[in-house]
Length: 86
Image (tube, rainbow, N blue to C red; front, top):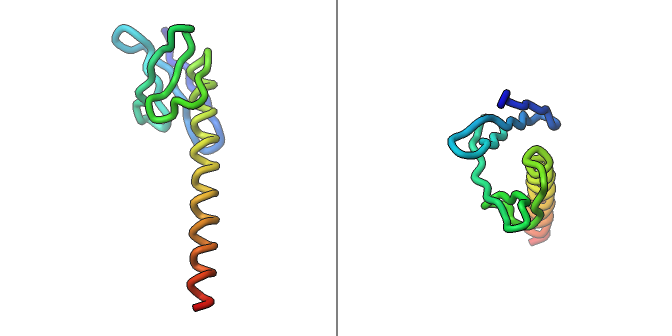
């Protein structure tokens, strides 16, 4: 299997041959994933939204991380505003 590289925003998603199953890498970091009985893939650290395709799964995970980062920064900003009032 020839490695499949996809750019997604600032990230690089790569699916390549592995031992026994394909490897999924995001920005050269190996991502642990499993397969459900239905044949759909899930990430161990993001099991909420399985997918039939590893590249699609990686995109969903990156969108999730982006939303989490925005939420965390808005919460931190809200916390800083509360501290300013005291």
